[in-house]
Length: 385
Ligand SMILES: NC(=O)c1ccc[n+]([C@@H]2O[C@H](COP(=O)([O-])OP(=O)(O)OC[C@H]3O[C@@H](n4cnc5c(N)ncnc54)[C@H](O)[C@@H]3O)[C@@H](O)[C@H]2O)c1
Ligand SMILES: [Zn+2]
Image (cartoon, rainbow, N blue to C red; front, side, top):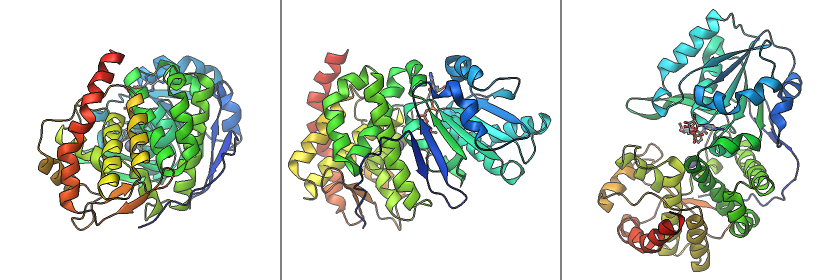
């Protein structure tokens, strides 16, 4: 068991450094930053060729702006489908073959422009093409900006399961421009906010309080409030992965709410929830479990639930038994030796992983928790339409 000792002041800086064994890198944040993308990228040195990898949808939304930031005669643009179903080895092969045909060599640069799907696939392609070429991440969803583009995890799905093939491969640079979020669909945006709340719970009571006070502005995509929470979330993720790049301990706290979330996603075959929506449910369940195991003070439990509800309506709880959900947790690849591990928050701003939560207690939360959480949730749903 480890407690996060991440007490740290926000730096307010627009450049956040991430440590990685293969080389440290910067995450640069700023509104409108992409208009100067070429300048940021040129600091990395010279490349023999530059290849922008994105999807049609993302490129339609943000390509025009980027084209000015990275002149297209300089870079070639390759588009591929970014549905979750395309996060596959087949897509990696297609990308690699396109790169060969375009003459990419070891000194080429790949720029991944998109959400987590684009980032994970292109990241893995960069890790494996000619055994590794330089990679710049330009995340365009809230999830990608605060989570998937930082930390070097790349990979693809197999028909047997998600993210089963991959590599730790740090990018050389991450460019985070909150302007690109303007075109993000509401559901994607709100799902990303669940991960932002997670950072408040596990590492930063001040971020948590800021979210409590400013959620309305954030939901309205107020740029100042949004930029603040994005930068703070990145600082936290950067701090965690810098200390535990390969997920041997501390990084586990990033899974707050995720043991429950993965079970919800599995039993509904990834069709009912956007990931962040499952995480939202999962964080409320983790708060209740913290209460049931006398780890989380009642006041904190109430605050977590209230803040998650502010994100807006969630798809309902699935019509499956608590036992089935629990079995899905036990089958999760993060369960070790059949023991389910739960990240709980002993105090807002801290998190610990526990592997001795009694099965009966977890099942009680799965059985009665949703009823407890559902009633008011429905009325919230009505309010938001
Ligand atoms: N590597 C990691 O550490 C890590 C962490 C979290 C999630 N992930 C992975 O990330 C993926 C989910 O990523 P996601 O939540 O970013 O979703 P996504 O990549 O599936 O994108 C969601 C949708 O939004 C569209 N989109 C992206 N940016 C847009 C923009 N600016 N404007 C309009 N539309 C836009 C995409 O085309 C897509 O249809 C999953 O595959 C998950 O496994 C990886
Ligand atoms: Zn997540």
